[in-house]
Amino acid sequence: MRKTYPAMLILAILANLISYTPAASQTPEVIPAPTREVDVHDTWDLPAIYPNSEAWEADFQTVEETYLPQYANYQGKLGDEKSLLAYLQMNDQAGRITDKLYVYAGMTSDENQTDSAAFERFARAESLDTRLTQAGSFVTPELLALPEQALRAYRDNPQLRTYRHMLDVVLRQKAHTLSKEAESLLAASGEMANGPETIYTKITEADMQFPVIKGSVGEDIQLSEDVYYQLLLDPDRELRKRAFEGVLGSYNASRYSLAAALDSQMRKDIFYAQSRKYASSLEASLDAGNIPVGVYTSLVQAANDNLQVLHEYIAMRKQVLQLDKVHTYDTYVPLVKPVDVSIPYKDAKIALVEALAPLGEDYIKQLRAGFDNRWIDVYPKENKLSGAYSWGSYDTHPYILMNYDDTMDGMLTLAHEMGHALNADYTNNTQAYVNSENPTFLAEVASTTNEMLTLRHMLDRAKDDDEKLYYLNQMAETIRGTFFTQVMYAEFEQQIHERVEKGDALSVDSVNEMWSNLLVKYLGPDYELDELARVGWARIPHFYYNFYVYQYATGIAAANQFVKDILENGQGAADAYLNFLGAGSSDYSVDLLKQAGVDMTAGAPVDNLLADFGRIVSQMEEILRRQGKIK
Image (cartoon, rainbow, N blue to C red; front, side):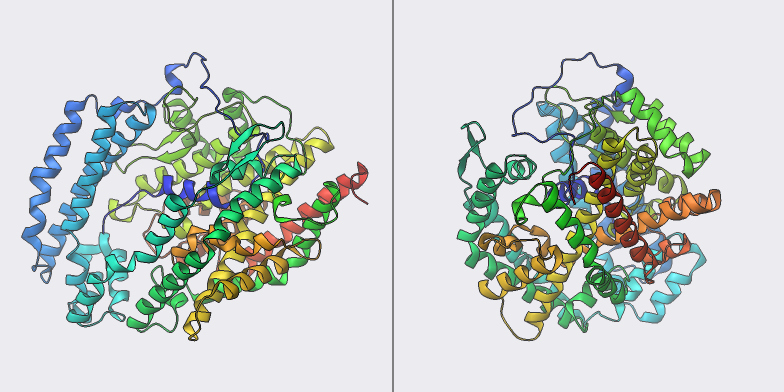
């Protein structure tokens, strides 16, 4: 019932899940923060949220002492529409203040991770948020206990118009709601049901120890997941192989426990789906967002129907890297050298204004506002959080954390985060608080749209074949990692659920076989399956998130369709896109996209993305032939 901010979580997921081509590949090392003089305009204006700690404390006290006690006053009284409206309005007010407390505390801590006072405020805000959620946990069960006729009357009541979609979501759950006693039993099982994911996390993050391997010049490298991602980009093939064997060997050593944890997760998903009278665990998961099962199954089918072009891309990789066969540890190393160009932040801002101009004058006006009004903490500095994210609350403008490094990747990251930020800005300026959260299904559409427009802009202005090849490779890797890889994961997830639904168990042998078959099918005849690659499924935590990864693929397909429509149809398509940015969660995700002209229940968005991938691969092949790098 309360708004959350998943941006940082989503970015963390993407960083671990999606392959990309960075500006440079090198053995990981500790890089000291630059000592450049930072202009105040390139930092956050956090005092605009709270001028001092006393103001933060005053709001904290208001929520804790004024709002939190009020929740108990509404329990058992939501059968009256006036009481329901009063509760929802009170909950919104408490949520808005708490979000602001949470965001301010989190960002002040991220600015300086040695600031113990800021860290303490963040922990307190997190605790307060949890207490509010717990205090309001009675609401959905109480509403579901009402007769369906009463819920429909609430949903259609003009006085509750602001909460219509929220109430419709509750109403849709009614058909799958059990008796009070059964619901109580299911609720009580929740903590126990977290067991499979908890066990997986403990095995992979606590018990598992990655080995130390030798680097290219004989240095010791302690493997970790983050280090492994970087080493897969290194031009030294033997180093990549050692890293692959070290990491996958560690997962292989725990394969029996990990297979048991995955089997338990499947049984958990199936238990809840069957308890609520769904035909399958897939249907139960998608129904939460009113996503037709056909969106999922047609996505998998489209990928399978278009694997030939992915096979061509892998074959091109084999030729460029001069390999007999492509192994797993060869699938991420860049095919081309990065563009050797420095892009200072001021130039990146100019380039993005030009690249995103097709979105219209209003979007560019808002983009400039973000640049000019201290939305962005731009540069790395000592004790600042690494990485990048977009955050903010309903009652603040968006904020972006960057660690800008004057590279092409830095500019693309800025485009990505500005996509998130302006999505939030349009939504917050259009929707009531209750409808201002962007659903997971739509979370990456705006950011990916910005990245695609920026890459196309840079490609159009490339000075020579090497530069064109770099941008084409960026596009190809984005589509391969965000679409094909995620659909392969989604197909695997569907298979393992269906296997257990048929009454079979997930053994190490059966899971390894399903995973191996998918790797060979997706990567094609030029791919060589190593024995350790068979256990690659064990590295993916998202199989414990109940059909999650397909949304990366639908997101990039939707973004690509928006870009295509905007570039072909001009301002009318751009206006429809801006309306989409302002829609928030005012309707179901598929319906919001359809209203903006992108129908994910039809084949066009995915078909167009795959056609574009084919054209990109063909353009790369043409340039590489001219350069004599492939035959």
